[in-house]
Amino acid sequence: MNSGTTGETAWVLDAILEIPHVQAAVLLTRDGLVSGYTKALSQASAERTAAIMSTVQGACRTAAAAFADQEDARIRQVVIESDHGYILVAPTAHGTCVAAYGDPDVRLDLLAHRVHSQVARLGEKTMAAAPRGADGATHA
Image (cartoon, rainbow, N blue to C red; front, top):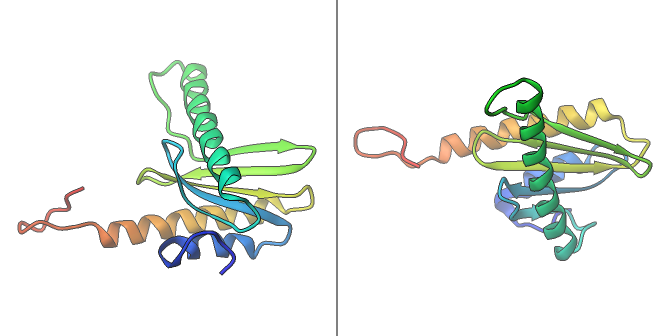
Protein backbone atom coordinates (compact mmCIF):
# COMPACT_ATOMS: atom_id res chain seq x y z
CA MET A 1 0.00 0.00 0.00
CA ASN A 2 1.31 3.42 -0.94
CA SER A 3 -1.17 5.53 0.95
CA GLY A 4 -1.62 6.92 4.44
CA THR A 5 -5.03 5.32 4.67
CA THR A 6 -6.08 1.78 5.30
CA GLY A 7 -7.99 -0.85 3.31
CA GLU A 8 -11.33 0.89 2.89
CA THR A 9 -10.07 3.73 0.68
CA ALA A 10 -6.43 2.91 -0.17
CA TRP A 11 -7.49 1.35 -3.47
CA VAL A 12 -8.72 4.75 -4.66
CA LEU A 13 -5.35 6.47 -4.26
CA ASP A 14 -3.01 3.58 -5.02
CA ALA A 15 -4.41 3.23 -8.55
CA ILE A 16 -3.74 6.93 -9.19
CA LEU A 17 -0.12 6.58 -8.07
CA GLU A 18 0.44 4.02 -10.85
CA ILE A 19 0.44 6.86 -13.40
CA PRO A 20 4.04 7.89 -14.14
CA HIS A 21 5.07 11.21 -12.56
CA VAL A 22 2.14 11.33 -10.12
CA GLN A 23 3.61 12.40 -6.80
CA ALA A 24 0.71 12.46 -4.34
CA ALA A 25 -3.04 12.18 -3.94
CA VAL A 26 -5.64 12.95 -1.31
CA LEU A 27 -9.16 11.67 -0.77
CA LEU A 28 -11.20 14.33 0.97
CA THR A 29 -14.70 15.33 1.88
CA ARG A 30 -16.19 18.37 0.18
CA ASP A 31 -15.92 20.26 3.44
CA GLY A 32 -12.16 19.72 3.51
CA LEU A 33 -11.62 16.75 5.82
CA VAL A 34 -9.05 14.10 4.88
CA SER A 35 -10.31 10.57 4.25
CA GLY A 36 -6.95 9.27 3.00
CA TYR A 37 -3.65 10.42 1.54
CA THR A 38 -0.55 9.02 -0.09
CA LYS A 39 2.63 8.53 1.89
CA ALA A 40 4.44 11.29 -0.04
CA LEU A 41 2.46 13.69 2.17
CA SER A 42 2.62 14.13 5.91
CA GLN A 43 -0.70 14.17 7.73
CA ALA A 44 -0.35 17.94 8.24
CA SER A 45 0.29 18.48 4.51
CA ALA A 46 -2.65 16.24 3.60
CA GLU A 47 -4.94 18.18 5.94
CA ARG A 48 -3.75 21.51 4.56
CA THR A 49 -4.15 20.28 0.99
CA ALA A 50 -7.68 19.02 1.68
CA ALA A 51 -8.72 22.34 3.21
CA ILE A 52 -7.28 24.27 0.27
CA MET A 53 -8.86 21.99 -2.34
CA SER A 54 -12.24 22.36 -0.65
CA THR A 55 -11.91 26.15 -0.81
CA VAL A 56 -10.74 26.06 -4.44
CA GLN A 57 -13.73 23.95 -5.45
CA GLY A 58 -16.11 26.32 -3.70
CA ALA A 59 -14.56 29.28 -5.49
CA CYS A 60 -14.75 27.45 -8.83
CA ARG A 61 -18.44 26.58 -8.30
CA THR A 62 -19.16 30.23 -7.55
CA ALA A 63 -17.16 31.44 -10.57
CA ALA A 64 -18.80 28.93 -12.93
CA ALA A 65 -22.25 29.97 -11.74
CA ALA A 66 -21.40 33.67 -12.06
CA PHE A 67 -20.07 33.27 -15.61
CA ALA A 68 -23.18 31.31 -16.57
CA ASP A 69 -25.41 33.83 -14.77
CA GLN A 70 -26.88 31.00 -12.68
CA GLU A 71 -27.43 30.46 -8.97
CA ASP A 72 -25.21 27.36 -8.74
CA ALA A 73 -22.94 25.13 -10.81
CA ARG A 74 -21.75 21.55 -10.46
CA ILE A 75 -18.00 21.20 -10.88
CA ARG A 76 -16.79 18.15 -12.79
CA GLN A 77 -13.09 18.83 -12.34
CA VAL A 78 -10.61 21.53 -11.47
CA VAL A 79 -7.15 21.59 -13.04
CA ILE A 80 -4.39 23.82 -11.74
CA GLU A 81 -1.18 24.16 -13.74
CA SER A 82 1.91 25.63 -12.11
CA ASP A 83 5.63 25.59 -12.73
CA HIS A 84 5.76 22.65 -10.28
CA GLY A 85 3.22 20.50 -12.12
CA TYR A 86 -0.51 19.84 -12.20
CA ILE A 87 -3.22 19.40 -9.61
CA LEU A 88 -6.42 17.71 -10.70
CA VAL A 89 -9.46 17.60 -8.43
CA ALA A 90 -12.65 15.69 -9.19
CA PRO A 91 -15.68 15.47 -6.90
CA THR A 92 -17.94 12.45 -6.56
CA ALA A 93 -21.70 12.68 -6.38
CA HIS A 94 -21.50 11.49 -2.77
CA GLY A 95 -19.68 14.31 -1.02
CA THR A 96 -16.07 13.27 -1.49
CA CYS A 97 -13.31 14.47 -3.81
CA VAL A 98 -10.14 13.02 -5.22
CA ALA A 99 -7.18 15.38 -5.66
CA ALA A 100 -3.96 14.30 -7.36
CA TYR A 101 -0.65 16.05 -8.01
CA GLY A 102 1.72 15.22 -10.86
CA ASP A 103 5.03 16.81 -11.75
CA PRO A 104 5.41 18.78 -15.01
CA ASP A 105 6.08 15.56 -16.98
CA VAL A 106 2.81 13.85 -16.03
CA ARG A 107 0.46 13.11 -18.90
CA LEU A 108 -2.54 15.12 -17.85
CA ASP A 109 -4.90 13.06 -20.03
CA LEU A 110 -3.86 9.84 -18.26
CA LEU A 111 -4.10 11.46 -14.86
CA ALA A 112 -7.57 12.83 -15.58
CA HIS A 113 -8.76 9.48 -16.92
CA ARG A 114 -7.50 7.59 -13.87
CA VAL A 115 -8.87 10.10 -11.36
CA HIS A 116 -12.30 10.06 -13.02
CA SER A 117 -12.24 6.25 -13.21
CA GLN A 118 -11.52 6.07 -9.50
CA VAL A 119 -14.23 8.64 -8.76
CA ALA A 120 -16.71 6.48 -10.70
CA ARG A 121 -15.61 3.32 -8.86
CA LEU A 122 -15.86 5.13 -5.54
CA GLY A 123 -19.41 6.17 -6.42
CA GLU A 124 -20.33 2.60 -7.35
CA LYS A 125 -18.99 1.27 -4.05
CA THR A 126 -20.80 4.00 -2.12
CA MET A 127 -24.09 3.16 -3.84
CA ALA A 128 -23.57 -0.58 -3.29
CA ALA A 129 -22.93 0.02 0.42
CA ALA A 130 -25.85 2.41 0.99
CA PRO A 131 -28.13 1.12 3.75
CA ARG A 132 -31.59 -0.01 2.70
CA GLY A 133 -34.73 0.20 4.76
CA ALA A 134 -37.39 -2.48 5.10
CA ASP A 135 -39.20 -0.90 2.15
CA GLY A 136 -36.09 -1.40 -0.04
CA ALA A 137 -35.43 2.33 -0.34
CA THR A 138 -31.93 3.69 0.14
CA HIS A 139 -31.55 5.84 3.24
CA ALA A 140 -28.61 8.15 3.76
